Image (cartoon, rainbow, N blue to C red; front, side):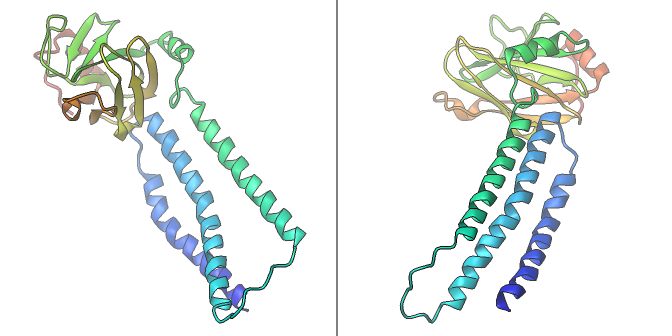
Length: 255
C-alpha cells in the first residue's frame, strides 16, 4: 500500500516542478541559437525529472521500510527487473543522444566553414570578423570595408571604444580568430561561444531577434588583462545599422 501511495506523491512533485520550468521555457528568446539550446535543456530536464523522482522515491521508500532490519539479506535474482532497468536506461540514453545530436548538428549551434560559406552566399547576411587581441576585440566588417575596436583606436583601427553593431532579424556570421594567444568569444545572453585561436578561424551563425545590448566576454584565460577583455554586441534596427556603417564614430547607438 505504501508503494501505491508513493506514485501520486511523485506525480504531484513532477507537476510542482514543471510549474517552475514552464515560465522559463515560455520566455522570448533573444536569438535562434539561444532558442535551440534552451529548448534542448528544457526537453532533457523534462525527461530527467520523473526519472530522478522515481529513483529517489524508491530509495526513500526502501530506507524507510527496512529501517529496523537487523541483518542484511542477499537479494534474489530477478531477471525481469534487470532486463527492465537495462532497457529503460538504454531508452533514456538513446533519447538524450538523439535529442542532443539534433540540436548540436544545427549550424546555429555548431557551425563549420561550409555552413558559414553557405550562409554568406545568401542575400543580406552580415559578416563580422571578431579578432581577439590582448586585451580587447577588433570587429572587422569585410563587406563594409570597416574595422572598429572595443579598445582604443590603434594604427590599424580608426575607430575605438565601439560595440559590435549588427542588425536585428538578420542572419549573422561571426568568424572568430586571434592575433596572439587563445581567447574565447562568449555572449551568453544570446547563446554564442567560440574559441579564438591564432592561425585558426572558428565560426558562429545566428540571428538575433530582439534589439538590445548584450555583454561580450573573453571566456579563456589570456593573460594579465583577461578580466578586462570585455565588449558589447549592439543589436539595432536595419536603418540604424546602415547609418552606423557610414559613420560609426558619430552615430548614436540607441537600443
